Length: 308
Image: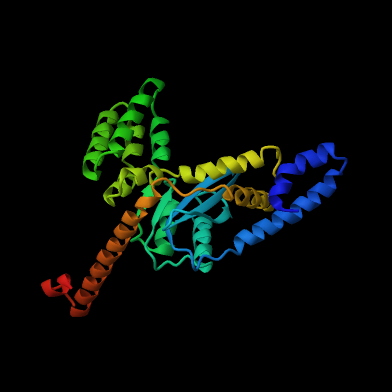
């Protein structure tokens, strides 16, 4: 029996079909173990990923990190799961290294969309390189900032932030800085949160992407939707016994949800992102070549070397 069928029928089979709970449990454990194994063994050597989204989800008091990739045609791919929170540097690095082992080449420049965790950013730099652009989730940022504000001020600041995110990078950052200055005196924690990682909330603006594509790339909502599907399929579980059980259920539920994936909004404009990523890679390559020439000559790069 397929894992997705089991997910839908576990409660009914156990409660109304006269089959013992232990029998149903054994069947589901077997099917969900197969789902987890299949996910962990997926290869991505021939999948041309442009974007990688990473976010976390909670199962009771447990955390799972989810990675979803988007290829150059706009199709989504469930990449992997890891037991732990996005703030756990060891877990994050382990998940990213596992993706590399399964064919996600660190040589290709991609856009990463993350929830804002510093451990996530450090892991991306360590495994894939610091030249990969990272977009901080604007939804997480807005919620973090508003969490420091009184009820009457929350909506006003949210509107300012959303409006600023629609502006060109420099103008948008200037508006956010103005808002932070205004909050500084009475709400210093909100001001600090607003300024933290500010430039990374404008990465997609800096890349010159069209508005239709920025809507999808500005947040980790693409991961939140599968998370909702996963929660729907595991809503009857009231007690998670251990980490292995969590990963089994998560893998089975996410793989079922993946069957209903659609291409991302604005996928027809992905060529713009692809061109921007390629152009950025060439800039980094030239910069590295210039630095290598300077080091070899024991001094500053010459004009000729810098122009190479």
